Image (cartoon, rainbow over all chains, first blue to last red; front, top):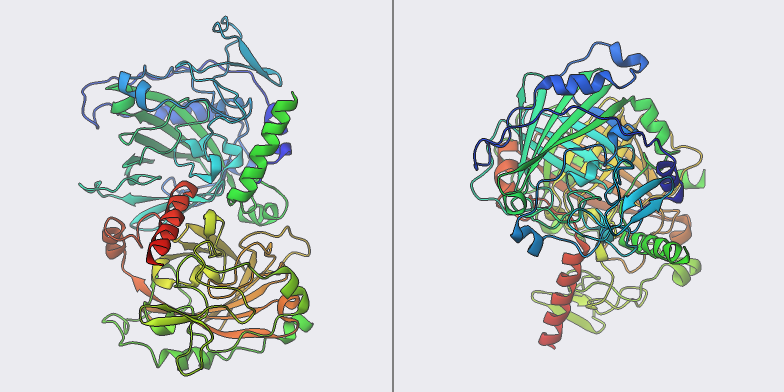
Length: 326
Length: 296
């Protein structure tokens, strides 16, 4: 995996101002799988987009049902993995026994970002450049362990939602057919298939990417994914895995020609009981094909990013060596 | 110029001739089709003409440099790789495998059927081409066509390649696992030219050495009827084979209607998500080695 030092540094010096956001509170109605996912008003996607500076081509005509093409995530604080201020629901006892990692991440860019307005937990904080991280996550999982867990470690699959953790590393390519939408993620080169206008089958063998079905609600593509195999991380800063009951709802809205918003809600009855975790928003910008072609040969983020276990092992060793020196 | 000369024009008629020896056409083979439309899902034919030993054109001789730098210690943890022994030829020490037997070493003395031997995708390293076509019925291919590029997705190990249309290779490029592919249409055949490999992947499970970083592959995709794509490949590698090329590779894929794809995604290992997890792969290798040890 070509996660270069340059990429790490570029995140390191990124903006840190965390804007307070208003979130719509989703009402939890019942224990069923569907009920926790009340509709996120499409206006939320619009509201979020209004905070993002518009590109020159943003006002071009577009088909809101056409998500095809290449999209790269914005490198902003609002788009980072710490942007969601909605707290994680409390873990069930089963979740604490079965899902917690021993530790997370080999670099200081994961873990729970400490709020400078609040005192640190009693384990102090870990500095990462000009940011501070709690030394453990809310469930006591140590963060910033060079040998800790991170999405894609050892070239195990990333899966969603972890694949959206660092959007500017993630060139998404979307293809649409009448029956399916394919979402290709260049970072670790994974793809997902959204089957349109179908139900999940009754029997599913669990997979890394899960089983995804999608349908349009107005101009928003709603994708419902279940059938995860419980072997992947939720995100780099969450100290436990998804269970095999993890349920992801994504809402893709193309708000103008150049801007694609993804709003996500997570549920996991085994981990969180009947509670859901809302408030995840990702913003991607359209990349014209000529730029994609050009950047393929110039930018680590656009070129082939296949995870080679051999390279990944060498990378992990370098990070561990570096952390040991410090 | 030398590189260009080794690739004699591959007559489109050849694709037609090979198709005439195909199995009985499917019911929908005679439907009208656009030969420039390769989009959709395609599964490899499970037949002798489609396996990795079908090419009877011998490999060009290896250069001395290649013998020093490219040979593997051994091939393959199962007997489905290695060089298939021709029963009409006096064998060297043969390795039996059910109805087939394999030479115990390839042409260059690389032992085959070693439980710890090399195979495409070992340890979840990328397979790349042409090795990804080795076992065509394992690899559901999906093509997406846009005005600027064609994407080829291979479900086996979930790798994809991008064929940039009507462009030249850049003068400078970083080598990659999949290489840099450019393509253009010659009549009804899509010609894809790939260079820029990083030299870290196999040619094929049946070949006892890796590609060098000078490996050059030309693929010709021809949709010969509504339901069939034929891929004809010519390989060259100046560091491995000098100015010789290795032609004669043909693969046959058949269209899978989308309803069948959806159905089989939940029923067939070949159609479902086939991501290589290093953890699972390690356990698989271990099981194969244990099985072979029991059989000794």
